Length: 119
Image (cartoon, rainbow, N blue to C red; front, side, top):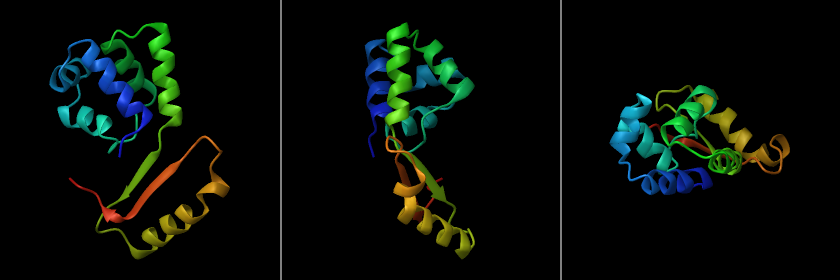
């Protein structure tokens, strides 16, 4: 699943001639994290992680704003562990059905309640 954040992250990283591995080292993360961000498999970073990403990419003020906006527009993914209780699956099924009622218009919530985490 691609997202506005994932696409922009790939663009910014490649513009700086950085590999996923190099960016991961700069952020003190593992390459899998960068890969999962770029593939939309992991929610975009927030807080300190986002600050470190912006710093590692040496983003301009404009690029920083674009990155933050792309995060706002990107869906959030919640994965449920395969060993979770049935009531957890039921909860996320209800949330998925009611997401338009509980999320503001710009925020989208992608729920993979029936897909186990891939780890």
